[in-house]
Length: 437
Image (cartoon, rainbow, N blue to C red; front, side, top):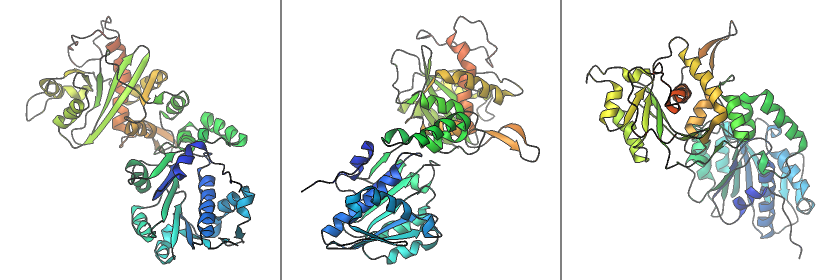
């Protein structure tokens, strides 16, 4: 008996091996994830029908006003790619179902935004596959998931992440269900990536760096066009500088802060190793006291780091009559305060970090939220006059400002021979362990 061969991207094959309630893939354009999942629904339909089983495969999207907006065309194309598979399907203009087998599996199509409740009435749902699942709300998931309740039923999810905070991303990537088989899949993982898309990808990398990372690399979407570091991040990704990093035990650790007394505090943990600026870890918290931030440093093994604070680190707390930097030192950390760069300080940080970026390496896992902040940091626009108004102060500005501080302070921190105290808000305390540069 001949064995059928199914063409799938190698990285996706483990997703469909063995039992799993949840299977999925997320990533950018050209990965082959939608075509692969469409094909595997047909393979599973064939297997179940061969065994004499009957039921329904529901293919859903968040928004679907007609079959033209559904996954039907993708499924038909996937079935016709495999002639042996096509022989077992009856495919009409508005339907797809198995034929000539002991059982019958039929496809149904649904839009979760309008007829989510209709899923409850679908008899014997074998698979619920939600494609383009990024915008699906938590409420929709709460209704859909319990509706798939057959003993061997499964839920499949494919999406291009736009926001770390989306319901789909939280549920299936940030905190996936136990036993879920979900992988990241991008264009480079697709052996059949077509030449026509490669040409488009290269053009987008050069001409549309603001959106390239989201569209092609599966990164979270920047909050606005005109993100300051979009091109720098795209180049760092292409050069493999956003990767897994390790702490060098022989080099000094630094932490660069953006202080938020009423909003967010952001911290980057950094090492300078030769020509490389290694961004090893990222922390952000809102409305927490200083002790919480310092405890995070201790808990993660950064108790020996030198804390580099922005100019407001020299401000005096009206309750304690002590400066912020003094509280940090009192807690056992060495600390420095960088002088305010004056008018246009925010853009000075932007330009300094842009110049530094070719030397920057970032840990892709530990610094995920920080990368997202850098990707979203953008210029505020006056749409009526079509002019820029400088950096937008929003959720992304805290992480971006802390990163900018790295670039502003690095020249003096690295060049210990330089007699230049202009960066500092006070006579600074040079750490005794200044070796390691």
